[in-house]
Image (cartoon, rainbow, N blue to C red; front, top):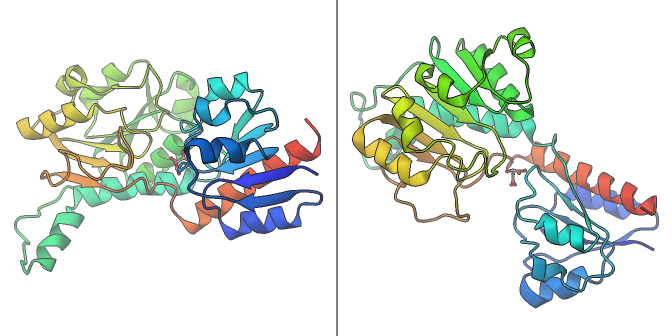
Length: 308
Ligand code: MLT
């Protein structure tokens, strides 16, 4: 009888599906690391995780039983895929479940940054009625550049268009014709798009190509006062370059949901004027977590019950 270990907190709907899966047993064991994680993984046929647990090469060492790990979410960066391949473990993800929640969060950050929502509320808490200090910017009529026109990038573009923004886009996998159909002005190179945007939002995985995609040379190409948003992966914007750009006044605002090192509770960006940060909340909605949990359980139980 195939057995499954759930390594991070999973929504109840996902657990209910596991309960109902014929011929499958499961256990929830969260917070595992080191030798405890290695030993636990060796006892099960399948594993489900979110981003909390780190599946390192050591965690898979000597494993002869595990057949698949499913990430309830998009990014599989917490799973060492080379080590999984060596151990014969298939790695899967649920790419669609949190699209809308993550896109909504990127748009939330863009709007809140433009209207100084966080510092204005902080001012009220501290007893100040700072109307003059927090003059904002309207997004209607402004230009948003979107890097990465996959599911999330496209959902952001669509929402920005509803706010009457002009949307420019870069994605090596999207044709100029398809972009045009979607009302997006297509650029062949990110660098060529940068001088034209008032806002930039990135929606790519973190790869060798996208790490430090926006660094000092790219900041120089951007308009003064540009606002930068990242709800994808930390490191696409070089964090040190963001600090420099804010200090020099080149950047008008930065909104980050993701960081090079996570958890991140100490960053030179925190507290700088024009900065708004959240602790990787893109997919943190009831709806997204239910959907990714259900998709993850379905993927894993199908895989295990067909004996692959
Ligand atoms: C994802 O990769 O699914 C999102 O970044 C959300 C998360 O990591 O939990």
